[in-house]
Length: 177
Image 1 (cartoon, rainbow, N blue to C red):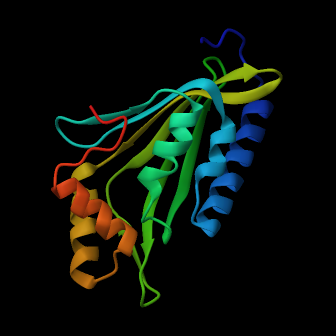
Image 2: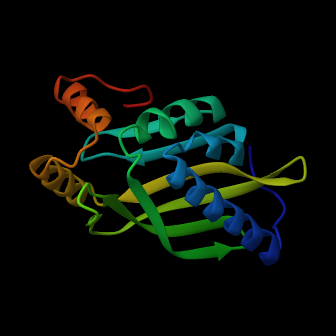
């Protein structure tokens, strides 16, 4: 799938507003699977998770089940505050920079330092702007350090603790390569 027409700046800004609100709603619910409605049937969504591993989800169902489902399990107490969005209306691309923040049991928050964000290309799917592809980027070293602090303070959710145990045992989720 390839985007051919450029979308107006206003249309792209309206999409960003809908996306940001849907993210806030997902954070409040602790469930991000509703965001799947923003993707085309054949969208791709990927990210790097270290020096030799990547994850790639290959369609809306896999994005919902893996990227927005399995990968977000255990992060029910997290927020991803968007700090800035950049819009390229010539290429129908948006880059959003976000912070990953864990809400701890004592009411404080721990932020993962470093840069984090999402890069999207949108296409027109039956009159609606939809995500054709998405790539996330973040500083994996800072993520590891933050999770070690959360382990030490006892602030990992039980679901995240199980995920880490499975990962340490060598279990790979779908989409890892």
